[in-house]
Length: 255
Image (cartoon, rainbow, N blue to C red; front, top):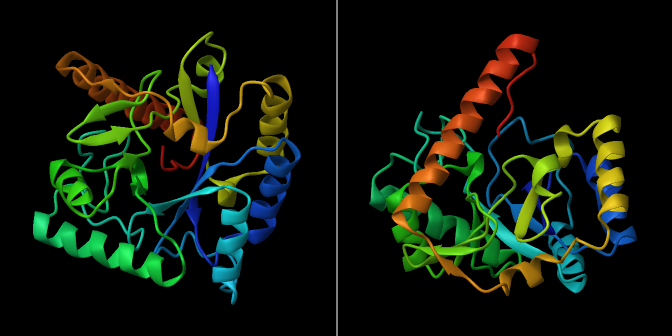
């Protein structure tokens, strides 16, 4: 299994200490990930530090390391209780909103990223949640890739290329073939999380690829059966996470 990494919730006011700690690991193992930048963060849960004043300079440094930048939603504020087409969560910034409203959100987000030096055709939905209107507007706005879905290979659907994420991290990375993405939220990582991830990097160091390599993997067509299976898997994972949090009393995080 070839493994790529995506980092969610990148904002000027994120927890930079934790991010730098993870960045150091990536640099040590020479892995260039995908990073999802929120164009206009209004989510207080992501604001962990005062805003970095030279964020544009930092963006340029990531580019120089061949990191791929994605648009991670708009304001990262959940506006509906919809799971959309990939219901890993039952809340969304986009799913369920009219097409015109979604167009306004996506175009404004794209413009804000362009002002800080980010030109991207990769989209990362907050909570992994989107609907057909989202996909229509993304394609209309020039986006080409969605970093979501389940499966072992990139696939095409609705004129966009979907780059699947891991369904069960520890099981997926042990497969003998295919591709997957590990989703990382550095803001919420603790010491144990860092230790576990470093073990994965050491054990599978020959399996990791840059996200640019992932973008170049040949794309397969998504069948109706494949869509149905993916929807069922996302629903099942959401229910399992809900049951786990109820049983353990742990706080439920975005899947």
